[in-house]
Amino acid sequence: MLRSDAVTKGIQRSPNRAMLRAVGFGDQDFGKPIIGIANGYSTITPCNVGLDDLARRAEEAARLAGGMPQTFGTITVSDGISMGTEGMKYSLVSREVIADAIETACNGQSMDGVLAVGGCDKNMPGAMLAMARMNIPAIFVYGGTIKPGKLGGCDLTVVSAFEAVGQITSGKIDEEQLTAIEKNACPGAGSCGGMFTANTMSAAIETMGLSLPHSSTMAAEDEEKADSAARSAEVLVDAIQSGIRPLDLMTREAFENAISVIMAVGGSTNSVLHLLAIARTAGIELAIDDFEEIRQRVPVICDLKPSGRYVTVDLHRAGGIPQVMKLLLDAGLLHGDCRTIEGKTL
Image (cartoon, rainbow, N blue to C red; front, side, top):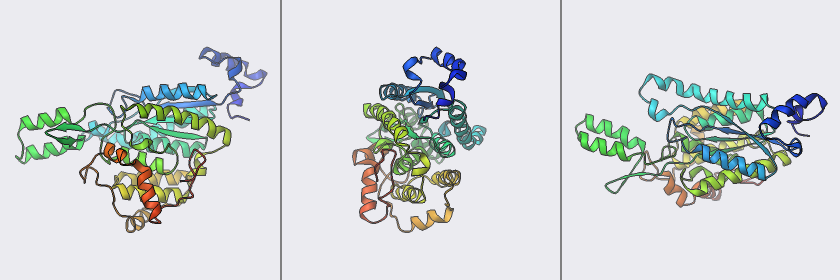
């Protein structure tokens, strides 16, 4: 029995079916699982500007896999653009708005599962909060990281522009150099290219088994990212049939794994407040002291910006988060029996 039977089955639901027919349902579609595609696409920020293509690929794959996709929108606030302005006060609030939007659409329409597509910082924890609240089969598709900007043989990220502001203020560079960094820091679509909040949270979600292996470090503009979105839809249809739900995966051990990986990659401190919120929603005991306890035993093994030399696409070429997890597992620093949305163990 599907959750969506509430709106598709029986004589009393004839008006419901009439409306669904208007958006593309046929006679044979009313017995298929309805899959929500929570699309965070917008032209507000490079993090989200490529998401519509991923959502469409996922939509197509879900339909071919035997599901009935229904796409709806969620918002985003760009931390990079709102930084230093009154607009930044809306950033953390946007996490809750995103979670509320996904929960409202999926529960309001009795959807059987959800595939969330997100890019900027609050998209990931917002989706995870909604997944934990609803506990219907769910998978997250990260929009992907931006490729590094290039200037004088050096890799640039958006933080390079923030740093340049400090450098010109202290007289280390001139306005011409500042403008050159500004024009080259962000070459296209994708989330900020170092181990900042977006890439940190996407790595955590991959570690917890709610997105596909390798998907959290792929470049937004590479074809493998779109292929991964399609594969994610197929996996979600299987998860609905198998009854794999987010709270099956969001165990205490899974949160410990996520924190271990965050420490290993030198991830963003924002992950503390996001993981605590997700754990609370999932009913898992997690405290800020747990981060410190794990930090003391897990070394930083990735030399990534903003503190290091490399960007996330370099990590991807080196094996991505699965390679990090393998090193941690070999060192006894990971719970290898935690399960993933694919029904496998780490």
